[in-house]
Image 1 (cartoon, rainbow, N blue to C red):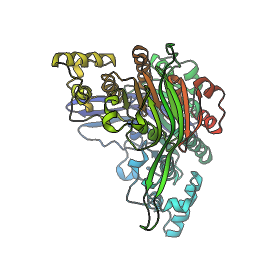
Image 2 (image 1 turned 135 degrees about the vertical axis):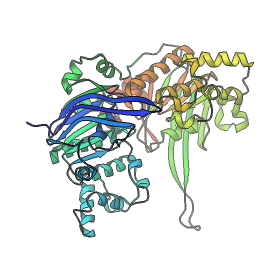
Image 3 (image 1 turned 180 degrees about the vertical axis):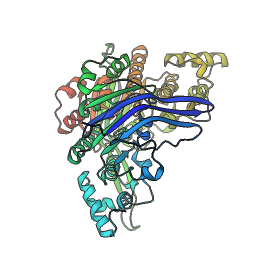
Image 4 (image 1 turned 60 degrees about the vertical axis):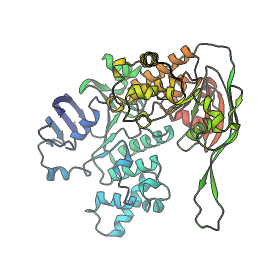
Length: 529
């Protein structure tokens, strides 16, 4: 049986700042018709540029060079001109990118964007509309007519990804490339998207090239796997063989990189945080001035207690109220109810009285790059809190403190004079942790701190957080939609849905014997292995 795709000695080189970068080095693999083939590896391993080369989407010039052979249905496509490639792109080979919002035009309706994919095949507008409706039905979109007239910003992340899939399959391609199609999606949405892709693969008898860093997904859906590191294929084979008998040390590292469940040091329990009847409401815009204001309840009657040195994991889909609850706990948004921190009823304190306690409660956000000033050095970022809270020693003592903190989070002191853009995502998250840690807080709220990081980096961050917790007796509130992370780091778990707590209890009980239907759905969708 002839392969649908055959890659032979593929090399991709870039020149950046007069420095030559070998993004892909002598890659060889093939994809059979109808199979799901996965490429796995960390960020920068060469996965995405390999996928782009299959569609000639890497512009060749004096600073970029793609060489080797790529055969598609026995036709060598690297030698094809742009006009010839246009006949393949979107028709015989389609691609779904990681972030649909950057791929969809914000100024065009969903219908118009889908129609662009097959405008040559359906000339009459009525036929185009009918075809769009058929495609949205195939990808599981409800309220089809409404969604066709909608703009991308009016859709959820899962809906936008389904729209991208509809566009990709509109011409029934032989090969569908999915480049990190589920990154940053809720676990239930992840499962839906992957099941959809698998169903479409079987229905249309097409091949699926899946690019991901999530080995839980790979194990569930792939027939064969290719492992890449620094542009080199270090191992490939059937999914079962790769997971049962990995040969390369890097493959073993990836498989073992899922955060391990660790037991924290046992300490005498003492309550540090008590939350009672917390509610958060947001005002909705009124359509007419004579109509009363309407409110949206983001958080409804949340109650829990948290002991010092312990971790509360908060899980739920996007829109469940997790982040709103976190912001309420540190009084960044209005709320009703009671919050008691170290026996201080902080819900009753005004900003002036609460300010001295802010240093004891720190928050680390999902995207460290957005929360780190691009104009400040790492040293200035870390020390900023000392200045704000007027915890100032002499210059020499402050510098020593900064160096101690940066070393504690696994970075080097020679990095202190550099800027955020010079660091990787994992390094930036370590900087954000150092910024919080320097104030010696007692409670740290972590809002999706490992989202979109490679699994190996996720594991490193979790290990670091556990190490710091044991050393400094820190208390964490860890918010995530990733149940692998939650399982690894939490003592207790709070499950949220539509702003409400549907289940709360010990980690082992929640994972082993969940009582609520929604909790069971989350766990079943989590691709745990």
